[in-house]
Image (tube, rainbow, N blue to C red; front, side, top):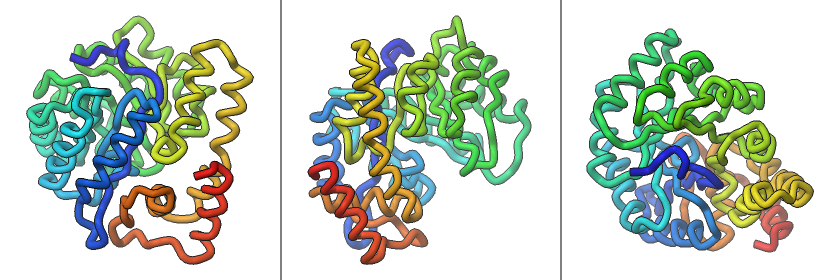
Length: 296
């Protein structure tokens, strides 16, 4: 079973490839998995925000997880998104992901309703009790309207199979507070904000779950590698070098720009699902310029 100490490095927040009919594209998923592992990622994170989990049915989530787990074949851990609004729904999905062989489960906070911290803790406790697979909490307040407070994370970190948190708040201070709150527990903090990878590592995070790693994989991996090897200057340069890509990602709704970038680099991951649109001509030109910058 995956231990907290094994959760480190750059984990790719993989997109969900679709064909032209916006159905799951198994062959493209296989291509992308192999490219990511070949470029040195420490794990594959599926069915997150950039994986369009909110656009997929439960049956599609399970089918996609099965494709990825089979393709990965144990080469790196697979972190499968099992989040949702209803505790009952999440428990059911978590059990199915466990049955399929996911190495860890990512569970986003419920969304739409402003839950209390006690309700959030109860939700996560119920999910953790339903499976033995390690669970990584997922905090992304700008999308969910919910924030996992450090005191709640301290409480949840004491549960045996809750082993970490992905924080996509964009706040270094929050990452620091999570690190402080979970000190002494078998629990890790991962940056979900690609702009903060190096700062998060310096603050005590064990790695990052990065969407940019779908495309500029080696560059993202080098941030971590340079950091652990003590070459902070090289790590700073690598961190700064992801900014041209991040600037282009802001030109459209998630994950439309990311998917178009991957597609133009040679893997047919298809468009995002409606209502998310496709990039226009000027945006595609900007994407191509960015790809040229990275020699892709």
